Length: 133
Ligand code: NI
Image 1 (cartoon, rainbow, N blue to C red):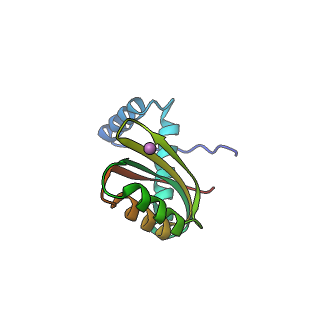
Image 2: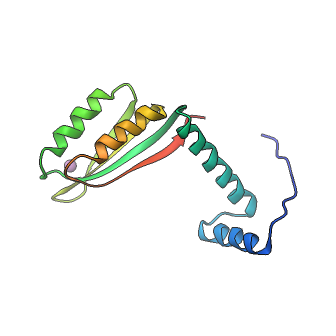
């Protein structure tokens, strides 16, 4: 894609914050950092507008707690239409991590994510929001 250039005027303080952001996140330059922030905003808009999006649900749970393994599995069967794949990692004697790649309308993905993360026995869960194109 062809690149277009434009001038940006910022207060000194905001420019310092941008440069700090560039360094903290290991961006090679300000352009990459600004691009990242714009993409982040576009993705958020897509999720808020219930567009077709993609992402991943990361779950950490203790498989001894309650019936979490079966319940997580049962839920995933109910949402098979939006699940691309899932990976299960036996992290330690007690803990499992699952990464569930999803694609579909944002509201349905958020619904699945909320249900999974809300299961009793889940230690940590996060929905990673991305987009399809
Ligand atoms: Ni496991």
